Amino acid sequence: MTTPLLEIVDLHVSYGQVDAVRGVSLSLAAGRIVSVIGPNGAGKTTLLAAAMGLLPSHGTLRFDGVDLHALDVEARVERGLCLVPEKRELFGELSVRDNLQLGAYAKRLSRATLQSRLDGVYRRFPRLAERRRQRADTLSGGERQMLALGRALMSAPRLLMLDEPSLGLAPLVVRQILGFVRDLRADGVSILLVEQNARAALESSDHGYVLETGEVVLRGASRDLAIDARVQATYLGGAADGV
Image (cartoon, rainbow, N blue to C red; front, side, top):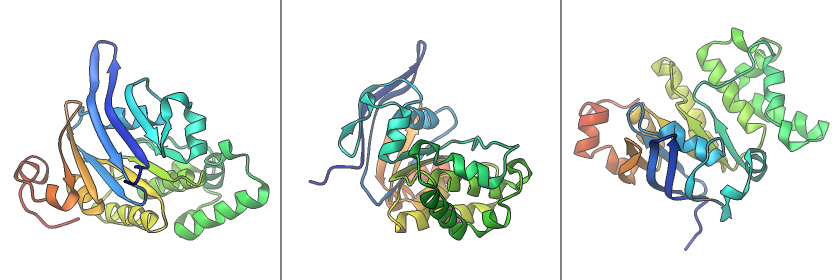
């Protein structure tokens, strides 16, 4: 049996006396997109933060068979794990190019390799090439999300964890961003996608999990979850047109 790229078993994360994540188990195979959907406060962001090492946790966390609890955040990035946070956390006063370069800070790249990665990001996101000297805080919402994705790609991730990439974006831009995400999978990057936009998440992923009050309540192939009566009623509003 193939070892999952990311394996989470019986994970618990607490804020003081509050259990934000309770006994969550999840696996992600290399080359796949796995989505996690659920309401606000379900523990989705907490789950990603724990996997990245930003929050203490208890339970099994393995990346490519390696125990993540033994690694700090920088070591996880070195191994190919990368998080794009919900608020994108760009450096607004810096240029697009400077923000991208910061994405490779932990890699200690040669100048030639750094430039090669910048060129790769610019090919994927031509808009960023046009805006490379522009301050990040002057970009549109869609451009900022492209920049957040591009900055993550500068670390050459094997697994990219995306926290609400569609947040605050117009439907047309959401389709564009999720198209970029699917392109990344085609290029060999695995994706763990956390989204409140359940329809977009399930249409873009291979497998899905539904998280409620810190626990997984449903899991399965995304196409099956999309027609599940509970998911339809709670997250999709019944059958509707795709994103």
